[in-house]
Image 1 (cartoon, rainbow, N blue to C red):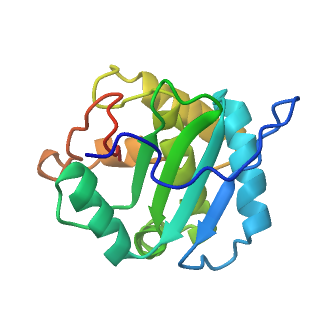
Image 2 (cartoon, helix red, strand yellow; image 1 turned 180 degrees about the vertical axis):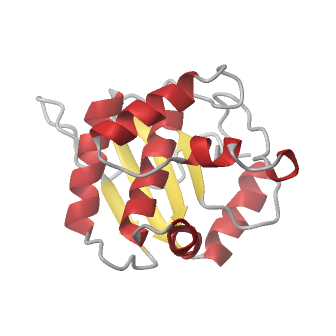
Image 3 (cartoon, rainbow, N blue to C red; image 1 turned 90 degrees about the horizontal axis):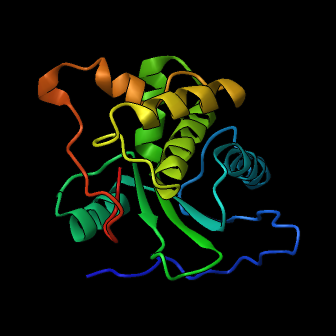
Length: 183
């Protein structure tokens, strides 16, 4: 069972708490550079008031499916997973894994860029790392995500999209503040 961060912490927290995320690109995202993603993550962390370093990995469906099976017991690819750091780990908020393939499909279906879709997924995962859980917080995460999307100039978010989907296609429930992954 996984009880710590998924990736090795490689960032350094400066005295002024400026955030420099670690980004691992295993699958490139058209129209998004590492520098742009780094800036967005730093801006989103400030907006969500998330403290600590974050690692973000962009990967393919095969790898995210493997992680989803290992940490959530679900044998399918998913768009985003978040792995909050254990409470006793100081200076590290957690890890985020995004399927660039699913991000591209979602972006195409919703009529916005793949880079915007990755930003939406990152924001959603950062809110999970900050302790929000849309499955149990009576809309608090949805309201916060909507506010953050407006501030960060992003199109509709995951919670908004999933609540407009019919009940048979709703997202599965996740465990709150567990060492397992959250979507």
